[in-house]
Length: 228
Image (cartoon, one colour):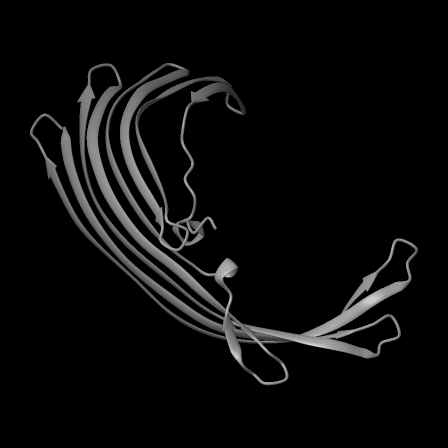
């Protein structure tokens, strides 16, 4: 039971809810890795990855509301069915080359393609007749495609009590999002640069100082991609 109080701490109303949820989910991931070491101690690494994610939830909620005298007032009910499908395919190539004087150069490429389909349907339930009516405002079907192609270079060096690393990543992103119910479409296409710089100094056995400058990008969880 949940109770709602007024600012003067007197009871405004209360309600109780009964929730039944049935969930089905599978999440499959596959990787293939290849590593080749050259005679000059350099290394070539290749990775390919595939993810298939499917999640379904059927949920029914019934609530009873009571007035400030805890006398029954009215009931509400709704049922939702939500589905989330995500397919991810990515491939990455990395090359690492040791240099003289404790230095290392590395470079690489990565491509990834993501497709998601997220839909939710809500029905309002009449507590007296159990008749179900489609709630258009809380129903939507959202499609999302994301393609990312990136390349990077990085240099690292250590000497005495100092260490240094600097890198640059270039990333081209193409995004298409489409809300089927509202007939809205959003397209983004951009190229961004992401530099990284790290410097550290070991002052003593128990003390070190460092500085770090980094530009990065954050993306939402794919299961949260239905924006309506």
